[in-house]
Length: 408
Image 1 (cartoon, rainbow, N blue to C red):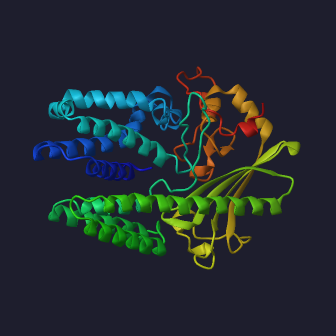
Image 2: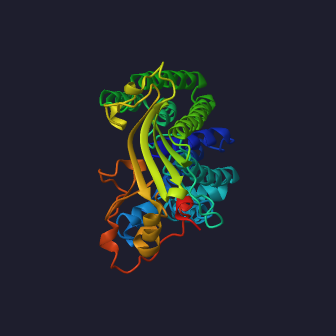
Image 3: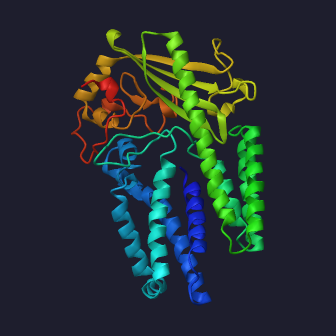
């Protein structure tokens, strides 16, 4: 997820945690404890993304692909992260250290904030098609949520509105105006459907009204924010399941000889009805595999396929599009070529530890989850230029997402 979502979720969790604990003995210590818990959940909710400092240890694009959402996004390596953050706070914040020495409640709250913040980061990052491998080194496979777009305004609204209403009046107005203006701008630019903007407005009203009823020390507004977020994720999860079945059934009707291995799904922001997808099919008898990119609407009666925001897929439907699904690119590739490259080019082998939808050209490869093969993106690698170089060191041993294509 984006770091704004991580930050707002962390701050909301810290505030809810603080309000759930018994009050400190005096007002000064209570204010300090609130600041400590808010800072800790915010920092822990963003801390795993410091893995970006590791990207230079491998040549581009491998450094980003293999080290971002890498070891810091695992349950085992959350432990040293918590210890580092704990040590930094003890070292650099003497008042917080003295508070934890004097108050068992503050101390327990701090450790809970560390755990909650790190868990929130992993949970939120698990929701989209980029994936994480939380159980490494015991299980190094990538796990994909395929449920939530990586920049999701729902989280900005449901967590941001209650938090904004807790700030002084001038900051509150600025914060609320920003929360309204950014989704409106994205809608005007074609990234959000107008129905999505209306849904965000409804969520903002609910979050704001409940927070106003809650009062200055209550928990109901923040609890409602988390309930709304979980409800949205549940709706997206059901929609993702349905979308995957629609794509798989359509592919089966197209070619009964092919075997659908995977459907990588990405929803449109704040929109459970519109989805982009990349399907991965295998035909071992023919020695081929196929990648198809497309867009679908789960309810054409509510949002026709052509009304899904064009910025995510283009505004011209192919001639063979149906009411609910359109395939706008199909690529058939050779399994032997893919396997030979993996065995004969160690840089390509490292790249395959990330790629879920590998489109392989004569000299370069691209993961089709992030754009068509003819359009370079952050996953594109010119593997031919690496062929005569020494094999890279410090390649994480992540499982191959496409082990089903690579063979035994």
